[in-house]
Image 1: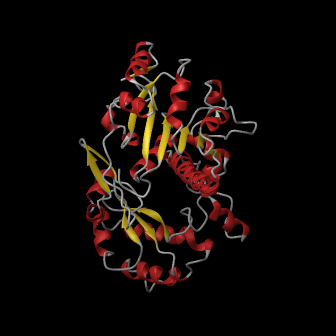
Image 2: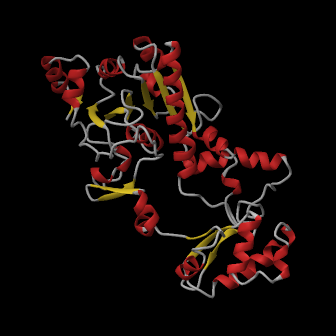
Image 3: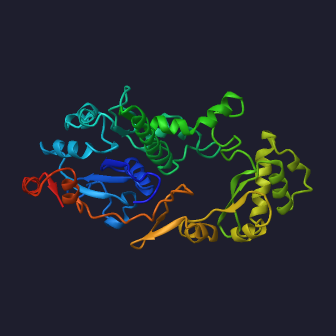
Length: 383
């Protein structure tokens, strides 16, 4: 592997969503990520074929029955030389398996032990079930997403699972690894999606403290409340995104939209005028198609872009020039990000078959051929 994280080894206890996303980010940038998977795969994983499991790319795979009494010994052998571990079970599950932080830090005192949950390791809701939508509801984030007077709208599972979950775990794990390399002491990274999604809203809390944000949907500067920061339907049924906040961008928007001489639009920052101005802009955008508007605004700094579908985003000239998307085994997917100038990541690798690297990983961990055969015979490992 090439990349900034080359030389770092992570043991990932396979899960769904945010944990695998953290593992993917680390692997994309060169970390050796060994994924410990259930024999036969996760029963909750969509049966869409292994190559389509984009979050599992660039890993090595060992198939291990964690419920076997001998599985803990295998994991301890793997973490002995690892920098970090990722797990996403409910609090207490790893401890019952004999693989809690005390168990593994006794084997490797410098281990960064990453724990991914929705509610966190502590607190009265720690043992509750939930999903992304529940975590961002409790953190106050979901309340602010939606149209004025309407119900909250789920923003896919991007803010809890991935922004507030997987990315936070990747950051926390690297912070703990850097600390361990300085101090020799590992630690637990308690990554909760409630905490992470709350952190993503830091700027909104800042606006609120300054009296610049009302605690309701669709009436504020950056939530679609204004006429100059919103989306609009066009004649073809497509949509454009407008983000003309600064005076120069707002002036360009007015000029290209034919509204430069309309005095009503002088009241850019008057919340009382926003609904009427938004309605007028919607009338204007309905006079042309999405692509006609995009072409019209091409040369003007008005912060207007077409809203693209997934295939359109893949094929857009800008994304194509930057190779924002790549294709592995016929599966289109986002390329590694961000870009590093001196240690760029190599191209991602398609997911390996579950357990494809079992024997090699065990051998590297110190198991001889006879021990591996015994583990396989007893159903502890597969692949």
